[in-house]
Structure formats: structure tokens, C-alpha cells
Amino acid sequence: MSRQQNKNHNNRGQSAQNLLGFHFSTPAPSQQIERNRNNNRNFQNNNRRKKNNAYKPSAQDRTSCRRKANTAMFNLHSSSEHQFCLTRQAHSKISKGKYSFEGSDSPVSWESVRIVKQMLALSGSKVDEKPSCPICLSEFVSARITKCGHVFCLSCLLHHVHANAHTSHHVKCPCCAVPIHLEDLRPVMLESVVAPETQQSITLVKLHREKTCSAPYIPIPGYSKHSHPSCVPCMGDADQKFSRFNYVDLSVYLSLLYQNRTEVEEEVKTLPQNCLDRVFVQMALEMVLKDIQTAESEAPTEETFQQDMVKPTSGFYQQLLPDPLLASTQRCSSIGSEKDASESGEAQSPGGKPKKSKSERYAGSLYMDEASTLEYYQSEDGQLVFLNGFNMNCLLADFRRGRPENPEEELRYPLPDKIKGRILEMDRKNMTPELQKRLPFLSHLPLYVDFIFVELDLNHILTEQAKQKFKNEFAKRRKRRQSKVKAEKKADKAKEREEMERINERRSRLQIIDPGDDFFSTIRS
Image (cartoon, rainbow, N blue to C red; front, side):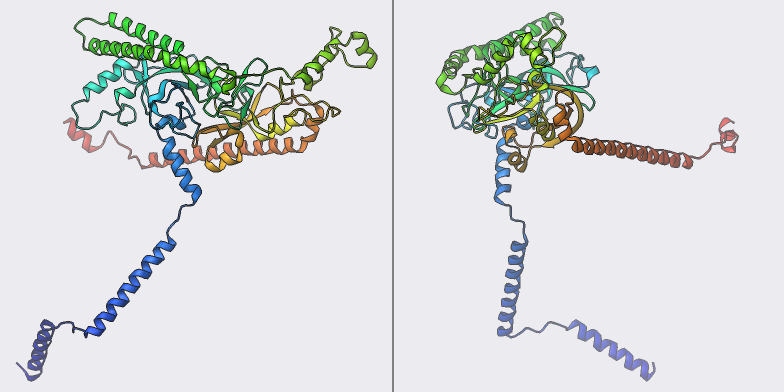
């Protein structure tokens, strides 16, 4: 080994020994304390910076969370397709008052629900189709709805529960896998309605609602208005379809249970003695009989509550009387003779009677008390479909909401009781706390429910003066709708073109198989 190689070898050995003996020098105690202080100070500053940059929910957000937690008492509370028939007496600690309903945003216990009504919004050609059970695929026999909103035959659901009872977890809904319990099942009434679509005719009804009450009413003499905070219509009332909550009518409830009993008894007769399904049908019959017994035991209490509600001083039902101003106007117009009409130059109908103006023909029955009442139009079948603000402004050009204060003022009739027109545009909304403040006439709807605003063609109702007043706005909205339709068609064509390009690209990748290839000749041999 040369001298240079020996020197390099020694250097490598010394460097290896230095690496093996390397260690961090221990700082002096004062330096270690100062370093720890700096580390703690940096840690605190970082935490403080994170807290300052963290999202702080506002008071409105906290209120929304609380309301959402309350409305989540059962999943269907914010459903636009369901109505709930409640007992009048509170059955849970959730309801703090005497009645089970305390307001649309107050929690309602599922224990108070006796019947669930479900509206099946179908297209016009499918309205007559009968719904079927998702399990047996046949028409419902003693239909029951779960807390998650799915409907089954009672016997089918019992079969499903007992088939999965051996599992360690809760039995889950066959449709959505949410845990279900037999005590949460409720009778259901299914009703098919026509889903609103553009260019389709629809009828809207004028409704009034007191600001202190969640129940709207029909403003026609002879009907009743509601003003109590806990008031909702009974199942037999004319305005019950416009409220998402109703008080149960025991006669209707018992009639539905008797019908369920008959359906189950007929189902038992069709099954042989040794059939397994017969066991579950008999179990369903026992449950229906138990529900009938419970309903009959609740009848005295419900009748007592109902008698208290119908008292005039209760605020639940107050009969509406005709407006003397409108009555006198109609009487004056009816006693005018044909001779007076011809002398005054008024237009006459072919029968000889004076021809009424559009405002008079479509005039409503009652004015609104603008200080304490709200007014809006809703779909006649109870769907959450409302008239939009532009149509309402057009109607207010010919009609008025409140009663005229000055007797010498030109008479303008109340808004029409009903309007019918072709849907020009639909705007789907979801109720949020901000929207609830902006639309006070819809504040009775629960949070997070879906609803629709529609714009109708009201040319057959509006006078020429109103049409001329909104002429520019009519043209602007028509142009916007046409542009929207063109944009939608253009987008559809672009999607179709993209899909065809994707299909053609896939086809170009396919290998063309030659039947005369040597591979197939070896297989044949």
C-alpha cells in the first residue's frame, strides 16, 4: 500500500470514528429555558391565529341549525308531498302547550300523527295509474308508511321485519336502509294529482292567512277563518288541503281503519292454510284491530277538544260574513233596468242585460284586512304551487287587496277568488330563513321545503289598461323565455353531439375480427 493510499485509509477511519461519536451538544440551562419559552410562544400564536381565522357561525346560522334540528323530528316534516293528521291533545314532552301543533316551525311529535296523506304528482297520462307496493309489486293492502316516507303493504313489511330480525342491527327500510320500527308505522291515504308543467292549464285559489296563525282559509262568506296560533283545519274542512297539518277527524280515521280491516280479511281468504304469507297477513289483521281499539279509546278526549275549538271565542273557527260594500254594489247593479242601461249607453249582452266589465265578472267575494292578514294564490289541489309576484302586480292594477277607506274613491273590486290560466314559466324554490323573511305570506311553510312559483297567461282577466301598463314588461319576459328555450335546445344538441362523438370513438377502437384468420382455423380443426 502506498503512502497516499495509507493516508486516505486513515482519514476514512477517523471520519468514521467521528461520525460514530457524534452527538448534539447539550445547551446551557438558560438557553434551554429560553428556547422552550419561544416554542410555547410560537405555539400559542399559531393557535390564536387559527382561532381568529376559523369560521364563526353567525346568530342567523345558529338559529337555522336549531330550527333544522327541530324540523328533523321526523324526516317528512319538510316534505312537500305529505300532509299529517294529528291528534288535538299533545302526546309528548316535545309539545310544550296544550295542543299537539304549536306552529309550522315548532317540532311536532310523530306520536301525535295518526294519518299521513301523500300526494303523488304524476303526468297527465299517468294520473289514473294505481300505485303498487315495492315488495310484492301489487296494489296496496292495508297500506302503511314508514317514518322515512316509504309505503308498503302492512303484511309485506311484517314479513320483511321478521325475515331480518335475526341480525344484530335494527331492521332497515327495504328502499332506503333507514332503521324502521313497527310502532312508527302509520296508515296512509294516497292521492294522485297532476304535476304542473309549462303550457299546461292550472287553477289557483285565493287564500287569506292571519299573521298570528299558520292555517290559511278561503275568503268566501259562509266559510270560517282561523286566528289561533295552534289552529289547523280539521280533515273535513274545505280548506284542509291547503295546510300541511290537519287535526284528525275520528270518523274518517275509523273509516280508513275499517277499510284496512276489510282488505286484510279478504287477503286471508285468498291464501291457503299452509301458506307462510297467511301468518303475516293474520299478524297484520291483529295490528289493524289494535289500531281500531286505540282510536275508539281516544274518541272521548278528541271530542272534548273539538267542542272547545268550535266555540266562537276560541279563535279556531270564526264565520266570515258578506262585505256590506260589495253587497250594496251588487244590489245596485242588479236593480238597474234595461231602459236605464240603454239610455246611459252601457254595453248590453245579447239577453238585454248590461254587459259586466272584466273586473266585475272576476271580482272576489271579500276584501283583505291589510293590517293583520296576508293574501296569496295557491294551487287548487293543494300542491305547493303559488302565483308569482309579477302576476300579482298585474292583478292589482285592476283589483285591490284591502277595503277602500274613502267612500268617494273609485270602486275597485277584491282580487278574484279563483284564477285559471296557462303556465308560462315555473321557478322552483327551497324555503330558507332568508326567503322566509322576504316572503312573509309563505312564512307558514316549514324550513327547507320545496315549492314552485308560476307565471300564468292572464290576458283573459286583465283589462286593456293593465295590459298597456305592463306592455314593456310582458315583451321583456317573453323575450327572456324565448332565449331560455333556445339556450336549452342548444345545450341539448351539444350533449347529443358529445354523446355521438363518444360512441363513434368507442366504435373506432373495436378490432375487426376476420373469420378467415388462422386462429379460427386451428379451433375448427
